[in-house]
Image 1 (cartoon, rainbow, N blue to C red):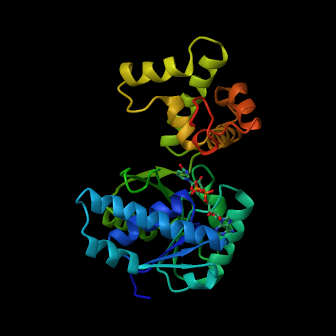
Image 2 (cartoon, rainbow, N blue to C red):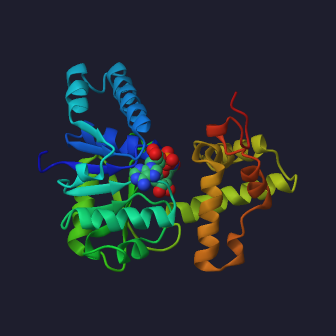
Length: 282
Ligand SMILES: NC(=O)c1ccc[n+]([C@@H]2O[C@H](COP(=O)([O-])OP(=O)(O)OC[C@H]3O[C@@H](n4cnc5c(N)ncnc54)[C@H](O)[C@@H]3O)[C@@H](O)[C@H]2O)c1
């Protein structure tokens, strides 16, 4: 693989988006997942994503095919050994990510190891790695091909060279890098998810319906999407997990997760992905 190869770990929602943006920006992408069927799904979703751009005249058919030719997939971690940057987008589970980072730091002695974590401590992830100065947060937003922000999160151990390399990569992908410290929720989720939590309190208290909350924030605060429709898109389980991280991280009662949010997660009403959240998706 060329020296431009970038590794992506995890071929789910985010890994697919990141791989799509990489290959359409001219990079070779090596996509790794433990589940072979997920890699097949990812390949087909990325192809669909690029075809949409062709349909909108934003990409030629030839460029789409050239981009797809830059995508490799594998269920073998070793496939990432030649990548100069590896972007991890595996599930948001501390033990799983720590094992992955430990393994990746043994696999390659010089690759930059970037995590797309929404909420976990980069400092703790770096601590399990050899050469922790190359560990950094590279937090993309969903849908990755559309949203321009990348939060670049500096762990205590992260070197300037690592941050600069990731900022350059974000720019090459057409994104805007915003530097943030390794603080729970970073910037966007610390602001956004408590707002969603407060919206859930409004519904729990019977003060407003989900439709009313969403209409109010769209019309009164010029949000393109209401907070509860957005929560359904993000996943209510993901929102609850982020509230728990904020509460644990700051120990401040203002981050108490809304009991209604907890009950909905317990019931399996996770939002769009299960067909039901604050709204119904039939
Ligand atoms: N979904 C979002 O809106 C969003 C936004 C920003 C950041 N994130 C973060 O991105 C990461 C991935 O989230 P997602 O929504 O894409 O998750 P997802 O569940 O859609 O995908 C996770 C993928 O990881 C794979 N996987 C599981 N164990 C693995 C392992 N040990 N090694 C490699 N792959 C493994 C799964 O098979 C799956 O394909 C999380 O850290 C999440 O917090 C998510």
